[in-house]
Structures are given as structure tokens and as C-alpha cells.
Amino acid sequence: MFTYKSRFALQLDDKRVRVWREQGTRNQPENITEHHAFRGGSIMVLVGISLGYRTELHIYRRGSVMAARYRVEVLDPIVKLYAAAVGLSFVLMDDNARSHRAAIVDDFLESEGIARMEWSAYSPSFNPIKNLWDALDRAVCRRFPPPAILRDLETALKVEW
Image (tube, rainbow, N blue to C red; front, side, top):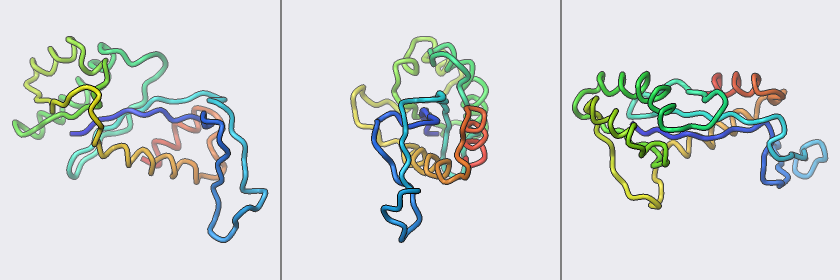
């Protein structure tokens, strides 16, 4: 199972102008919109995928994602159940974040008999979920009207996922 988290915001944060348009409508003024850094807030989400399966979209509600929170909100209710269903061939591939490498997480995985794919820190990520984040972001951006508040963004992410 590959897991990964990502942040989705109501507004983009790179101060670049984006143009989302239908083919053949290039440079029409109504297609150009200005965005400002994280106005309205953002949502941190996590998913897991494997061959023929995907988890529900897990939304982190407020605060930082620390190791204890990762264990309680993701490993115990999501990963542990899926690992039990798959059996001994199950291997977890997380995103190598510092909170995912904490002793509390290692102890939990070991106590549950969950194998983890090891890869060195600072190595490039080949996690296929990164491609899904782009597709999900594009699907949410295509919605009309676009999400205006965090509750709308959360609903749009869940529907599109």
C-alpha cells in the first residue's frame, strides 16, 4: 500500500496567474483569474492506494501531523485493517516524512507485524499517488462554481476522490 499526504488550498500560493479554459478560448479575459496565497485556508489530506484498492480520503482536522496523530488517525484505523485483510504479503510504503519515522510509529508497525518498504532519506519519491493528487486537483478546479469555503473544498475533494 502506498500512502501519501497533500495540502489542498482554496487559493494557490505561488502568486502565478493560472488560466483554466476550454480548448479554442485562448486569451479571453473571462478565463484569467487572480489568486492569492492561501486565502480562505487549506486542507491536509491523506490516502492509500494499492492494486485494485484505495482508501477513503482522510482529512486531518486542524493542527500538525505528528507521529502520535499519524498512528491514531491513519495506522490504527486504516493501515492495520487493510494489512490484516491482505495478509503476510502486505508492505507499507509511506512518504518518508519525519513523523512517519518516529519510534512510536516504528513500534506500532512492529507490534502489528506490518512490513515497511525501506528507502533512504532524501531519495527521490517514486510514489504513484503524486499523479493522483494532480488529477484530483484538476477535477476540483473544474467544478463550477469553485469551492469558496473549506467545507465546500472538503466536499469537492471527497466527491471527486
